Length: 309
Image 1 (cartoon, rainbow, N blue to C red):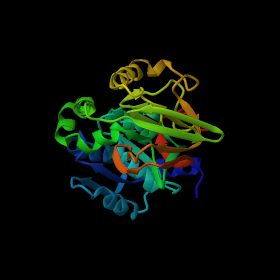
Image 2: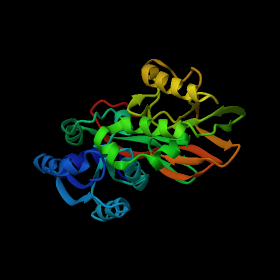
Image 3: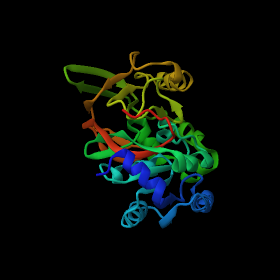
């Protein structure tokens, strides 16, 4: 396994890369050709290039890309695409390059890459390899978050066409349609000697610092060895709506020391009935569930000067 500095130097010198773009993501189809051209213009030797437009083909395309043994795997798409790439690159001597082409681009924002193709390509050219944490939900690695409750139902019901047309607004619109018949969960969270019980329609456990395109807190990020667990409101449905709005408006000012945040390295989550779980926007089983940090599990290309712990 090369050091991060050695891998950075090999990427800059050899420019050996493979490109996988989820053409089913919000902007993936229209930007695939542009991304390919920009990488070639920047001097990258694209050993393999894949535009994925069929459900279920993303992992196969990434396996094909990795078979070329690139120094850099460039993944374009939303958080689900990036999470898939992160899972497949965990503990490997290959760096992940991010092209944030999705709706919210939470993980890219967490590591300082804004949803601009120009900035993303510049990071691949001038950035450096750092390592960041992954989360583990059961046996499923993830880059950004685990959602239990209403969000898991939303991910199963939001129309993909609507998401492409109106972006992140598709999520709250779908939530409003489901909320009227949603039952709250009584959840028990155990972490070390802590046991916390609460009733809520929605709980998140985040590895990164962003959710729904907005900061979770001012001091959460993907390289701090911590998970951030938090319910969104209590049993009344109006609290879910109120707390969601509060999180969106004040996340950049709040810290991990404030309620309702619980910052731990590992936790066990139980609910009064089996509840659906979504991991980075994809369905992933039910509770009960162990969630933990896999420290420094993923190497990524980050903008110059990004903190690396």
